[in-house]
Length: 83
Image 1: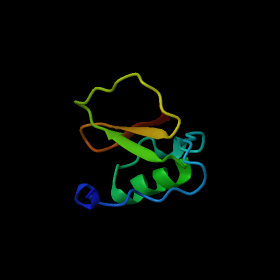
Image 2: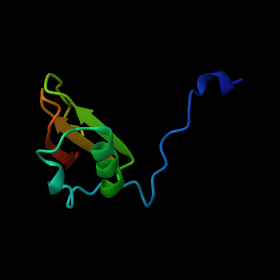
Image 3: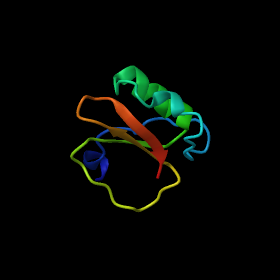
């Protein structure tokens, strides 16, 4: 019985789920609040949005569906890149 293993349904993604960061330049310098993170997610089309804090390291693996949002210690977005 696998139903006990499923905790929740993932987010709905419109389109292919493939990430595009071309239109996200507006986000740099903005607060990483819920409104901006939702907008970034929607505009990127990514299937996975991964916020990265200042003390966190990342692996150099690449996924076509992932957007990494780099956030500084003041909760300000420093970069948003498909990686």
